[in-house]
Length: 219
Image 1 (spheres, one colour):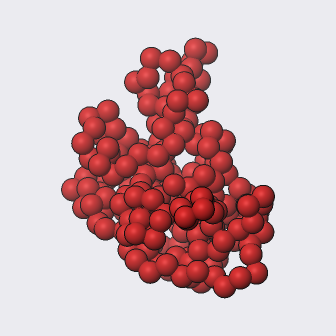
Image 2: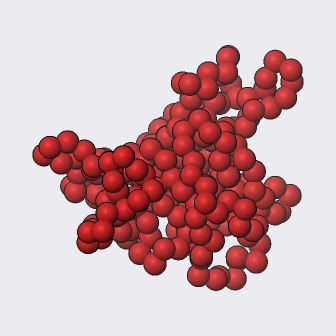
């Protein structure tokens, strides 16, 4: 499972719907870790807007704010079966922009960290949900969780779940609260077809890559 992710580039092959996309240039060079505020794209008043929400979902129905116990990830099975998450799934979906994320791979002698990126280096978006918890002073604390899905990469030692990347053609529908929930459920059940490359990184650094050959992992 990923421990952190980055946004260092705005590169995205242009599509017609990108005219509605807010500029993400100010995010370049960012690295985002659990329980930090991170960029989140949501749909408000027919526009896609950029907000900074805290990574670690605290549902609105929680009796107390427990940020340390918040949900960083939610599996697609939890989203589809747990009644507590049905409202956010229907009305509070978000996208989390990234250009790469860090994962650990199991080896015979332990674990090694890799950075996963798209083949051409383009940016992408994780699927997420968000919610707002009302604090004692009446203000709202907005938080989000990244959704995960089964991935064929577990056969390569990368674990059973992977952060869910929304296909480009589905991004607008994912953000639109008017998208039929049946369509959203169908997307969540779609098997992940991973087309990423994996850069091994130094044990003491999550920014420097080894000079070795880039490892391609086929789905």
